[in-house]
Amino acid sequence: MTIQSQRKAYPSDLSDARWALIEPTLTAWRAGRQKTSLGLGGRVTDLREVMNAILHVNHTGVAWRYPPHDFPPHTTVFSHFSAWTADGTIEKLGVGLHRLVREQEGRSPEPTACVIDSQSIKTAPSVPTATQGIDAGKKIVGRKRSLVVDTLGLLLLVMVTAASVSDNDAGKQLLTQVATTYPTITKAWVDTGYKTQAVEHGAKLGIDVDVVPRNAQVKGFSVVPRRWVVERSFGWIMTHRRLARDYEAKPEHSESMIRLAMISNLAKRATGESTITWHNP
Image 1 (cartoon, rainbow, N blue to C red):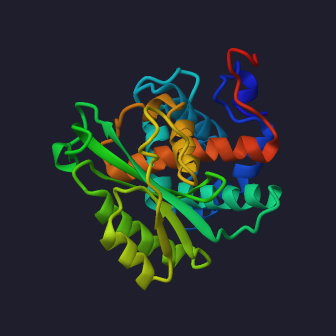
Image 2: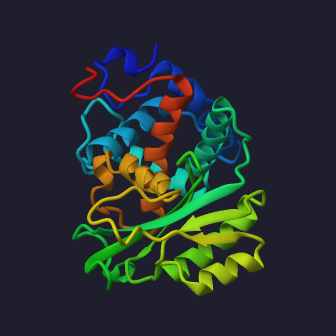
């Protein structure tokens, strides 16, 4: 009997089906850690409950120190989150689920095209000023989230920087990562913030970077071809309250929070579950 079965479930908890997708990776992580530990025994932390606690923080926006008392201690939860960020476990979970969902959608597990865009976000007072900056265009003091998604809007790469970093500079770094991590990608769509340098850098890497501008004849909101996919991805992650502002002290922790939001989305898609809303109780 798991600890979760002894308490009332929270809406953010993993279902049995979603846990079945995540459990093998976390169990393998624990086995690897045990090989290098002293093996002195003691209480074994329930990894499902740790992940439930992390997702609770991600969904609700509650501070690390303020989760419900029926979760493991906040120090245990945060230490696991930090370890899973540092050793790439969270990223590995996202990659595995991404491949699974693409195959379920009838696509090749390896994408051939992507969309890149950024979002400047305000930061909490606890965020170190050294990791912040000013987005001169949007007049936002904080950080910038740059995403690379496939044509389904599923996350491929994420990079969090100071908001002062230009889209052009961030784009060049991301294109380099794309070429290394996803060598099958030969096409990328971006907005006008990604200028000649990014386009030329992509060409050197064998990636055709196509700048897609907004229709100047249309006032207000309009759906931009190709780029609407990544705009929707930003919408998906913003339903997770922890991401309404950047609260993380370290940029890499911010990246993990974004990955966790997309992991939640991917796991629900893979199992055919949907998010509970006011019109779908």
